[in-house]
Image 1 (cartoon, rainbow, N blue to C red):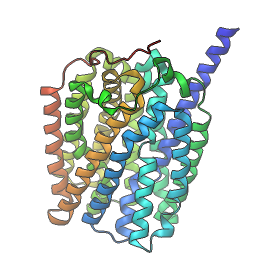
Image 2 (cartoon, helix red, strand yellow; image 1 turned 90 degrees about the vertical axis):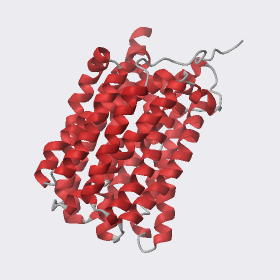
Image 3 (cartoon, rainbow, N blue to C red; image 1 turned 60 degrees about the vertical axis):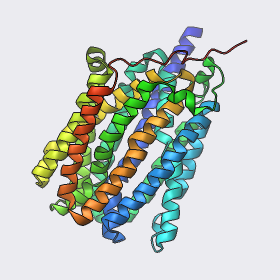
Image 4 (cartoon, helix red, strand yellow; image 1 turned 180 degrees about the horizontal axis):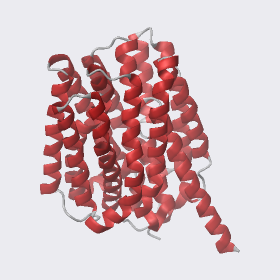
Length: 403
């Protein structure tokens, strides 16, 4: 009976993991693909202003992500996550109310970035805690996020054509609030399994003690500088070449739908080729897609090329998350994922947003995509040449609890 109850408890936890991924990325899909279009069309922002505010948001996320990770590792992870979601939902609904003042809008935007920016990496750590020895099946649960993102991007583009872009904040707030409620119910093993390795120290240096991790993060930074900016400005790119807002949603939906079978296949692909080669392949697809966008600025062709981003993202997410998890001490799991997220999305997003924003105003969006693709391919070459082939923890990485 005890084994049966334990099995049922694990099944419930894993079902909640899938549901949480759906909610997180439903919220993301309802807002991310359309946010820069809102800034350009509704608020009249220039590319430089968009890039600068995005970079400032990324700086704050970068500074706060390791702190969120360390707080999460040192306390009950699900409660920290639920709190971050609750505050984010309150802040996002203030965006349209503050649209009349740049300074107030900026303050709300930056505050929102601090709270929402670390939620995905915190939840990735919870998911890995729940999966335990089955951590290589991570992709099977993460695919539910892609399904949620695809559904939201596809459907909400048509909704915003009717209701206007300002309505995105309401939909996002509802979905983020629902994610906070689910997070509050992720107790038990999800909240405390990290304690089996002893109390987590708050020393970030122990996470960054492995040189292989630092080299990996350097390659990820180069790749994601181009890729994150390409995703952020995809709506602006499509608008510039004559695409509609519904086409923007369709483009992101195609990418996310392709991620689903790729996440399913990821465990076997990683087992067959290893973390590094899967990472190299995924990042090469990022750069190639941006170069092709620059060479062939045709709206319908954007949809045809989006599967490259979907395949690339799914393999990148699985290989990078698992590679970092293998390179940091287990009791610093949340912190390790926070550092990866900070580099891959915050630091890289900051540099990419600034560069693409300035290129948008000076050379044009087509040139920005072409240059970005070349930078992304350079990052792939860096990973191939310098990242070690096997992910191993640094000596004495897993600290033992002393009696």
